[in-house]
Picture: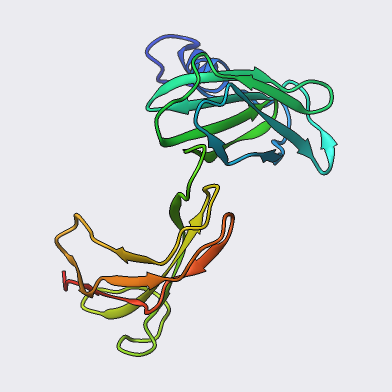
Length: 212
């Protein structure tokens, strides 16, 4: 802390205090090696729901005093701590009445902060959302399993029905706001999706990335 050349004696030491001990107030302070928590929660919530819960564990054991927060459109709409049983009961300040997405954020002492998506769905009828995708460039691309510039590849998309009733047959159209992405074929069909099921669209969508 008394290295030569400092503009003031001890300045380097206080710089270390400022950056390493005091730090940024938005950062988590770890006093031990951080752990990975497991979170069990309901990812689809019906409109008008007044509360939900999250269970936080570490290697199967309850994790108490974890902070569980739900953010929607940048606003905090629910917050709670897990109890000794690892369960946090989250009550919404105002029940959500519009379809949309939110984020469940879970943090705790010496634990990595994790984020999970939530979806608010209608109380009746089907509600189909994007679930997963995969690439295939073995037919018209270089076969490396990655989308590359100036390459035509197939995109397989899975859709999930998180609603309360079967969806019926669907036609899905894909688009992009990026001008370097084009779709020689941008539609696919999906047969009836039962509630809770995920189905891969057929046929695959063709995607072309511009050379640049």
